[in-house]
Amino acid sequence: MRFAAIVLGAGASIRMRGGFKLVEEVGGKEVVRRVVEAALGSECSPVVVVLGYMAERVRSVLPKGVEVVLNSDWSSGMSSSIRKGVEAVMARAEGVIICPGDMPFVRSETLNKLVKACGEGIAYCAVAGEVRSPVAFSSRYFKDLMALEGDEGAKRVVMRHIGSAVAVEVDPLELMDVDSPEELELARSLVNRLKL
Image (cartoon, helix red, strand yellow):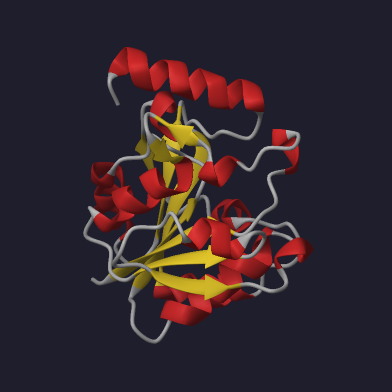
């Protein structure tokens, strides 16, 4: 099955308190670039990055080989970016992986595991059973994703179908996001210590 990767990068990083997390560097690379490179290194194709706030600044750090979709309605919540991403690939893909753009340690191998586990259903990253992103959805759930509203994320669809969804246990470090200056500093210290 052909899965597309949708990287969500449209938000304004409010919790960063003045900084803009997607273009902050961790280990010499911008956070969003790390995520996108993981997607490009996976079996997913195409890789679509949904941009909104400071779109041109984010676009300037993206590697070649990605498609950019602009979401002018980014301030209405995450669901608008999910809808834009799914809309961009639904005619070409049998499934999607939805991945936040602020997870600098996510690995290509994990995205491939999600694709393999998903099949015609749903597969999500899990830490001790807790539903976490990224998440893979087969095309049968595109309608559910397109119906999300406001700040609803992909987790809403997972929880609606949790009985049939497949959990892929992942090291919590890999799923670390950088929402705050403190988390950014922690990520920087970890990348140096662990040579990630």
